[in-house]
Length: 453
Image 1 (cartoon, one colour):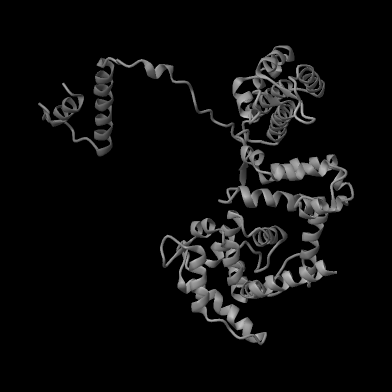
Image 2 (cartoon, one colour; image 1 turned 90 degrees about the vertical axis):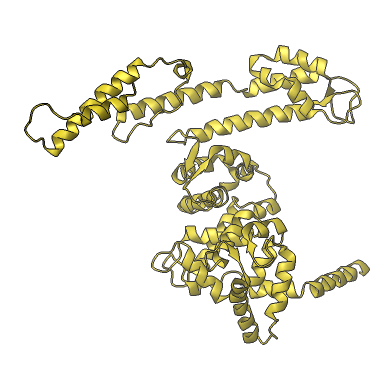
């Protein structure tokens, strides 16, 4: 019989003799007692035909609380031991040199120019002699991945060695980053990444000239780029895998090169000249020297031709302190405007343009921002351009799925997001777009004049 039915009948049966009326709490206790009794009997009588659940491994481990000091210490020590063991499994410099020697010794002629090649048979021989640490690299899958158009079915020794070096470097870097992962969850918080970069500075020769007093501003500048592009939801943490997958770490570690060209330094966000440029701009804009930027001070950014409407939106949406912007918020602003082709930058600007928070731009939104461009044109003595013409050009460039709305994804897919946003927020940018044909013709004439001379 079903236990629910038994319980229902038991409660429904009238008492043979009158009893003292029970309180509501007593009735609840009696009901719970009977429920527990009958449920236990019913459950105990069932036969579990599926024993598979007993083999399911444990998949959740609770992190120690802040007051569980001993457990936290144990966790930290065990992670340190684990990372040390992983580090010992990697090839060291001596083992890499030995690998190169074996590859060179087993090369398969003929060479292609000056590039030594190796076939699959010799590839396996090297794998047997290289030792257990190298076993993971000497597989058919790796060989096939590096096999291109060689008529003898060989791969380049240099390409294979670079592949091994890259893998070793990635593992080393992952271990190095994991040492700063305090929670041990595969993420780095802002403070974790700040500590990593701060301790990395002395190992980068290109940063030798930085004053120690500037270190905190340099670290803030460097960390901001990671979080602006890799943490679009602003969760305050980044996956270590994402850090390894992007090129930012390569750019940062490029500063180990003592002979890095001036051009490379200027285009590298993490270089000393670049960091000093961005911080110098911030100081120049800060006219009242209070360490913060007001809307009026920010209006002089770049060519000082951004519209007041757009600047109003910046201060409405971005984090400010008593209506003023700090250096960290300024860095987000600079990264967005200097990288307008990137999805993260377009997301930043799109949020500012989406004044109704609808998730798309319509004719009203476009008109709202372009009206400010028209007003600036009048102030500068230029003939205002018809909004209708500009609106049609924007929709033609973007080609949105919905002919009346432009979503962020439409803007990204069109590869015209930088042009569209520039037209709407910056008079100088709009003037450049409007006169693009004349500018191209002028550049061509100048090039022709140079060729004649």
